Image 1 (tube, rainbow, N blue to C red):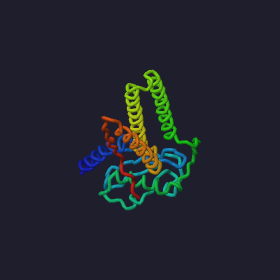
Image 2: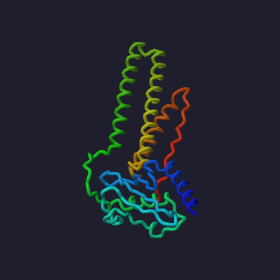
Image 3: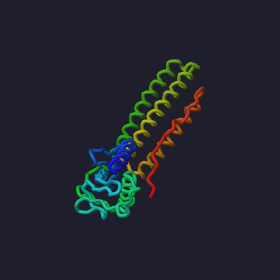
Image 4: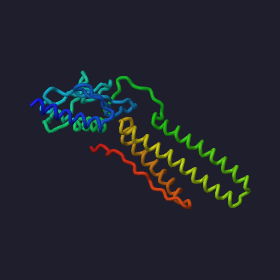
Length: 237
């Protein structure tokens, strides 16, 4: 029977390693992030696997100093899945249940040690910095265009050069936009960005990337396709 328990735990740990990148496994204890408070502080939990798991339910504790109706004074997190526990449940069900709880009841979370943050989140600051780099690069490209056009006096050669620079301009913007979208995905998958802000920003920059691609496709001899962008499914209530 012990071998069956070990096999189940090994399979679950393998799944966690591949799909829950914020979780660290040490022995029979998992530690990872499951969301953020309203002030932006990461909510970390510890899941302890008992000897006879999955017959016996895991123990769940919140490590972050917060108060919540479902958290006991010793940090124990009370979940409906724990009260209804059966051996068919798995760790991924536990983690999903924790995330749903904190998403649904975000207004009930109170930081015991509030974090002073600026009005702009760290992620949006990174995005602004990246956009500034794009703007600076575009400024340099514009200077090159002006220089080349003044040199050739607006001849056919100048027009060809202008098209090449247009293409370079758009390609640089597309590359930067792809990097920005990858940054958004990474922050969402690491639970450093909640679903509402993720989809708000993702929708905005996907639209901007589409416009850039359309500009590239309008240039003669260019046929670009939008890169396939995969995102994790949002947590369903």
